Image (cartoon, rainbow, N blue to C red; front, side, top):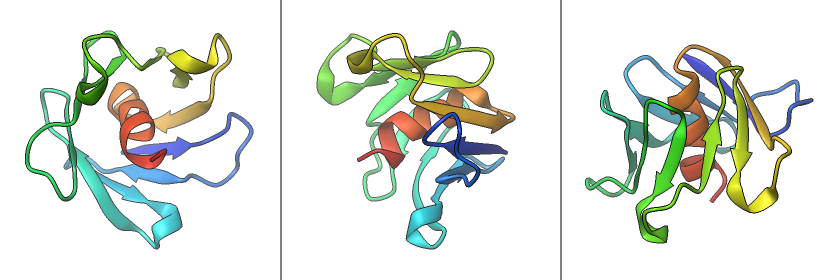
Length: 110
């Protein structure tokens, strides 16, 4: 399970990634917003085809934006958006850091 925070100083998570890969949005009363499978493919809750992928290095890809990573997650759980430079925009606590960070970038920030 991974807790997803939208700011490195936040005390309340905006979302949670469960062990089964389901992603819940805390601001939507715990509704499922998507899922991430074992291979790192990311799915929106309404679409059965992948919208993106997270690789084993923490790079996050959004298929609608081409073959370049839109951001990454480091091994300490800090989430970075390529458009915002060198400062982290979020923080992950728990397991599955890379997948939780990908959920933040692709499912919880829309």
